Structure formats: structure tokens, C-alpha cells
Picture 1 (tube, rainbow, N blue to C red):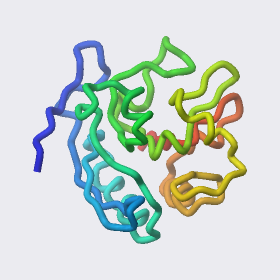
Picture 2 (cartoon, rainbow, N blue to C red):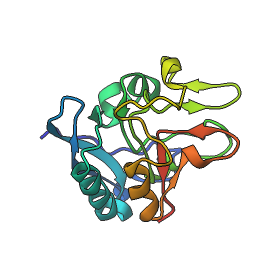
Picture 3 (cartoon, one colour):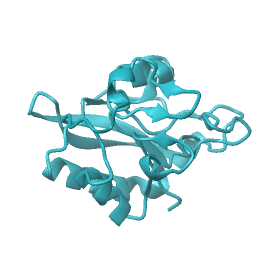
Picture 4 (spheres, helix red, strand yellow):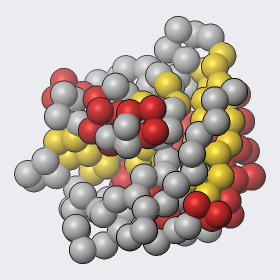
Length: 176
């Protein structure tokens, strides 16, 4: 197993001691089981493990789960590659004066290429145009009626697809 550096930059709201990495099982697009690594807030490690056990049981397809370290901490590269990830010390896309829940280790982005962030002025990742039509039914896409959405919501998480001003279809977060 690869050892990941648990880091938190000096300007970030968490120290590395408040983060942990967990191994989660997921069902891949190749219709086979896989294991990936999520870096998250230590306080939600057990809950996140249980959520991913439930996602695995329903065989919701996830392309890959790798920490942003594998992408040189470049979120755009990870999103373009359809990587599912959690911790990232960053400001909110919609409000650069506030930290994202990712910076607290309390958010997970799932299959971001298939489930883009859509606002009036932005589409992220930039190569996700063909998935901005949310009427499509493609394995790995997330909707309000998806079992994966129900699993997160039942645990008290919120889904960016329910936001009013913009839609962040890949984003789940918790305040624990």
C-alpha cells in the first residue's frame, strides 16, 4: 500500500493530525471490485467507511479513488480524469473568501467528470460539457433519485445537486 503524505498547508484550517487516509472498496466501471484511498477528517472516518460499504453493495460505479497527491494536488487534473477524492485545501469555487468543506476534510467529490459543477459562468471540469445534460442516464452519473444520493442524505450529508444557485453534482459534504 502506498503511503500518502497527510499534509495541511500553513494557511489551511486543518493540521495534518486532523486528517487520516482510509481505504475504501468500490465497484469500478470495468464491473470489478477495486480499493482506493480517501484523505478525510479523522472525525468522519468510520462514517465514510460505512457510506462506501453501502455504495459498494449497490455496485454504483466509480472510475477511480485517489488522493490529490497523485495529481500533484491539481484539482482540475483530478476532475478531468474523473477521480473521486476528498481532502483538498482550497477556497470555495463560488466564494474565494471562504474555505471549501474539502479544506476541512468534510467533502467528497464523486466521478466529477460525469457529474460537473455548473454555474452561470463556470463548468468544471472544463472537459465535462457532454455530461452537463442531466437528463442522460449514464452509469456513474448522480441524480436526486440515485441510490448513492439517498445513502449520503440518510447519513445527514448534503448534495451539491440540491443547491439552488448553482449545481455541484459530484459534491457531497457533512458538518458532522
